[in-house]
Amino acid sequence: MTDVELAAHLAETAGKILVQVRDSGLFSAKALGKAGDQTANQFLVHALREQRPEDGLLSEEMKCDGSRLGQGRVWIIDPVDGTREYGEGRTDWAVHVGLAVDGVATIGAVALPGMDLTLTTAAPRPLAPANTPPRMLVSRTRPAAEAVAVAEAIGAELLPMGSAGAKAMAVVRGEADIYLHTGGQYEWDSCAPVAVAQAAGLHVSRVDGSPLRYNCSDPYLPDLLICRPEWAQQVLALVQAMPKAAAE
Image 1: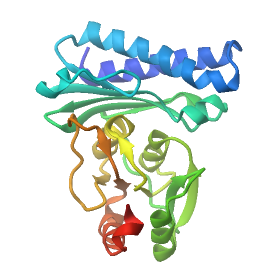
Image 2 (image 1 turned 180 degrees about the vertical axis):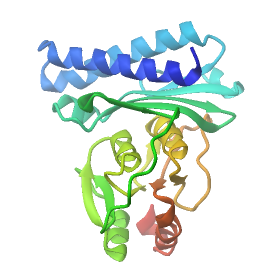
Image 3 (image 1 turned 60 degrees about the vertical axis):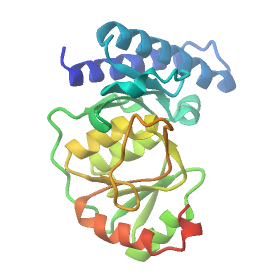
């Protein structure tokens, strides 16, 4: 099984497990997120250690022992991206299975179990026609001030959505044109989505235009831009022109 086949199979299977956990009726809404996170994480960790024992591993739900830092191939996973949305029975949550090679997000699968859809770095779909006016994704609970300001500057329609993976895949699928995030994330939030977005021909970078790097000693990644190529230069310029305090 190739790396991308493995990533897709694991993301899809973890998604099915999560749906079964949610539909079991055994957990309160408050406990469901934790139960789903831990159950999916155990499956993904055990499966990756069985299938790729020589590779490193970083998961949101597992304490890092530092061994991954000396390895060139590192799987970076988020068992449930959008725990709140998962617990609320929404569709805008995801499972991320990504592989970083020498610090670059190279292979990825993002499962959207609520939509019965998995997008991967294999055979990416052509980009859909751009939206007019452009559509810009923001957090459904706490839209970032800088994202709102950029949307106003370019005349974009705001589209609230849950998880980072769901937002990134909305751009890949053509539902939106721009996903700008400046509120802080971690490597597991973006590794798989970034790999899939890059394979689809989208622009991906930090908000200063620099590339995203993975398998760092500190997995914190403060910002991210995924957008159609034609919007990249203008969005980056607008963000960089903002007062520093507003863009942090």
